Every structure is written in C-alpha cells, then in structure tokens.
Length: 125
Image (cartoon, rainbow, N blue to C red; front, top):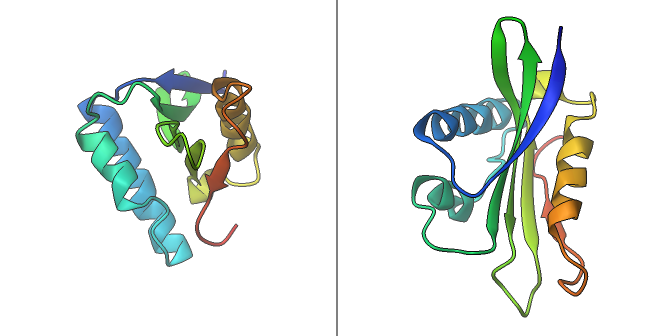
C-alpha cells in the first residue's frame, strides 16, 4: 500500500535534516537553482527559539518504509511583512499533488489576521 503523508514539525531530527538537504540538492541539480535560501537551511540546522517557525515534510509511504518527497518551511516571525514560506518538491514527485498538499498544510497554520502568506518556489515548475 502506498500513500502520501504530510507531517508538521516544530523541530526536525538529524535524519530529516539530511533528507531535506538531499532533496534540495536533487532539486537544484534538476532546476539549476537552489530551492531553499540560506535562512531555511540555517533553521534546519539550528532551529533556535522561533515560536512561529514550522517545518512541513511530505513522505511517500510504502510497505518498504517512507521517502521524503517534499518539504516546506513557514516563518511567521515577521509582523510587518507577514508569513513567508518556501516549498520544494522532489523532481520525481512533481505534478502528483505533493506541492498542493504542502500548500494546504501551510494554509492551515496561517491564522486569520496573519495576513496573506508569501510563498516561494524556485526553479523550473
């Protein structure tokens, strides 16, 4: 049985950090541009104490285990600019609803009154 699971995390473990970095490298190789800015990579490694920073992981589930196929980062710490998000989907998982599922999860974390979220996706989409 296969499916896609979206997890919403405050902090990511070392295995998730490595998987997100590998995902970002695969996307950069395909698209020719880094999919995540340095700020997001720093949040992965050193999450700090940001009360309004969230990690979203999309995993393809199978009988053999799970594979990270998408990642999003939501930063709600800037009261003037409003929420900002970055999204990356594995090249092999694009056009399969993964990005849309991540966006749906992001929308659920953005409260009314936060203002519209600015969402970034870099590369050949």
